[in-house]
Length: 430
Image (tube, rainbow, N blue to C red; front, side):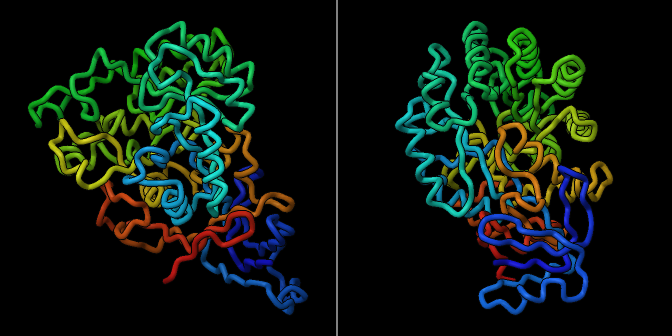
């Protein structure tokens, strides 16, 4: 039994924002009450009750990340499911949704079963998407029905854009029949010379070709039209351009099946970071302009963009130390996401703290119909306790990799504890 006393309890699902005590029994929240005197005296006197004084702390639903890469199987020198789970817990995440671009890819029940079983051995909730196409080659659909039956919560070839319109249409039709979302990496390679670098200031400075905004715009246009045709729940992943934000905004006026996600790095940084940080700021889609960054923030404000997801993408130092054209795209993000949300969105007045938690917990859980994202009596005891104003330095990551453009920065938002299934998954030693 765990008793969390005197915390500021946030539950975006019902608008709760008040000082309260939270009592956890087993893996469920038993009660939430005003902190009045000795109301819980019987539990205070019970041997085995773990008491946490949460004075000055936020007590919120555990964070939910719908877009992570744990590189397992196939690339475990970068990350594996166990190290990824530790990074997630340290970042306040109690549930993560794995992407399927592993080796072998999650295009078959055997690989999906391996991933899910290994996930069950960690101290957080790990679920996984499966691939849309065999081998992520974009030509032949996977057995989506069998994969859904075996536990796939959604479908994506993230990392590999789907270029054949008829394949996308069939995938959407199948996903709709299975009541699963389908997520799209929106970058048409026919426009791109060097991926991970914006075609503009960054590519000009480096003297190489880059990835123009039209690469994203073209595929977003196509997929929104197909979503309207099929009715499939469609997710536009890691949105990076102001035009794509506006396309989603207009589509949502007539469709309720469209979702969009933004990463912390896309609402925090611009292409100038690539000039300063090199490959540590190289990712797909690339960091773009200040106008794009602000458009993403406005999209988060007005609900055009539903979800903040990290696109946690670990790479080894040796890989990131290669020439900018050869280094792989992607950065880690689980351990810095909440802090960046606090610094860039809450502290600057774009979102309230409750709205930030909604974008990082409640809305992601709702999309994948996960038993998460709520802090209320009778719900799963998945919580994060953090101080929004205290600071920490982004170093000594527990992820197996440290490819972050925020390495060494002082950030707000110190996580005190992450509780998953009523057990402490992470506790700050300091």
